[in-house]
Length: 268
Image (cartoon, rainbow, N blue to C red; front, side, top):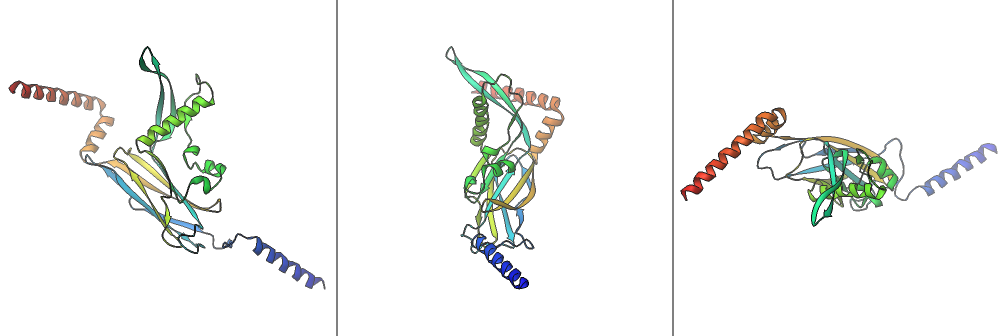
């Protein structure tokens, strides 16, 4: 009798677990979803005629349980971060009819390039806490001021932070594009980053996240190297490795250009 009762209890419990599981999704700890991703290019060379480049990110979900490509079963977020730099935001104030710099704030360790692509708006994919922990989206971007001395309240700090993001957006160096990642099959997906002509050189990190129903299932990471090439590489290396020589060469070129222009105008 006891054995039959135990079997009945386990049967009822199993039915309850299956009934409470999300519709269309049965968890399988032995075969969890895993991301497999790659980029169309891992090395980008900037020459004098560089006008920007498009980098395709593509991937697949191993053990996908998605019924169709357009079912919206999974969500994918892809972020691309460039090398860090120090950025200064300055606040202007009008004095005697002139606009002058009134106060400034430096943010250290800010990404020189930051883009986030996703299948839909980030707020619809995961909670603000999870997005913040992962550093996804402008609201979660970690911009640390060098010092808060002389800063009034938190609103002023937020204003400086927003100004940095706005300036970077104008330069097409900060992007947040919902809907830029799409599934093209039950497991296959793709998206694209547009790197502008003013793309900073250095090492970039692409991070890919797979979500289901607000929960992070899998992550993957890959790298991109952006560097100068040709004449641009020579000028760039000289400017950083031999600044004195670079300065003298710049002055010499300016003098020669001025003399040449003066001679041409005298003839006419």
